[in-house]
Image (cartoon, rainbow, N blue to C red):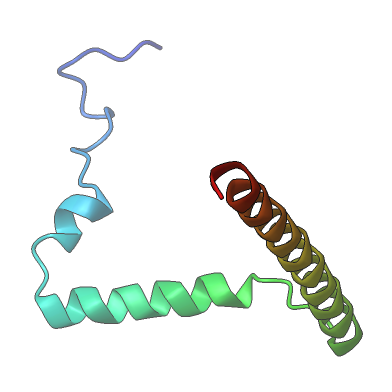
Length: 86
């Protein structure tokens, strides 16, 4: 059986949540926002303490190496500029 436009079995008018959400007050929207934030945070896979310490050490070592490299290049270029321009 095929459906026609006038058939009563067609889908009802679509009312999206976005359209309904815009009619709510600001406190209801704020409450919904915080509920969704909590729901998203519950999906996060949090690292264990051992993983957290490992990642922190890796980041600190990497940053230390990069600061040393940039400082060395800065010193080298400063000496080069002083050598060229006196």
